[in-house]
Length: 247
Image (cartoon, rainbow, N blue to C red; front, side, top):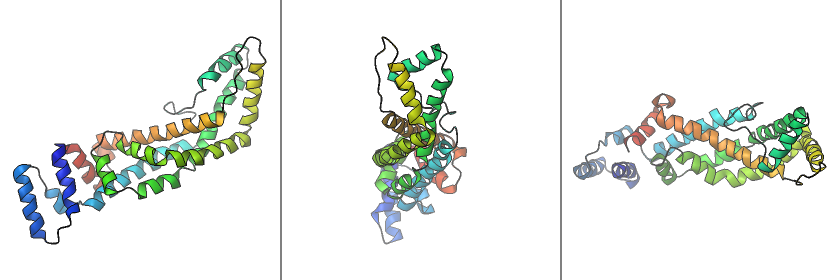
């Protein structure tokens, strides 16, 4: 079936100037591969296939990533909530045992607030990645697995997103006092007897967890569009992902 879909996708790229020649080729292909090529007559060509994938990605970014920028977008979303790094989990447990749960809760909240601030900077980078998608990219995504579009974005945006997120998170920590809160928490813990001293890079950790959350939510929407016909809310999405359904 993948062979059929590959032939279907490649036909519009061959650039025939005469309709009769394209019709003849379609007939020859159908002799070998009995697949319905009538969808080509509906002008679903190279540009439209790429356009459909771009629309799907934009929908995922708009619908899911935007949620993460809201207050509690990370903190109250169990799929992406940023928890403490392993080396700080003992701190959290110790503080709670000592009756300092409010301090532990505040420290965790501020990590998530910083991520919510940082994700607001992601849109221009995603727009560039989506705009620059080639037909080959689109074809590979369409024929790929349920997270192929997300993987494309991850491959093409992780480095610039990290560079954008990291200073924002650092600034956010300072703005909301998270740097001071965590410095106080870590100092209190390190002053306890018989504990292993810790000094984690929370800016780097939170940046990476924010990126992880962004791509996780985009993947949620991609899977939805691929598997649920009702999520294909435009004629273009319906046409393009109908091809995927046939593979």
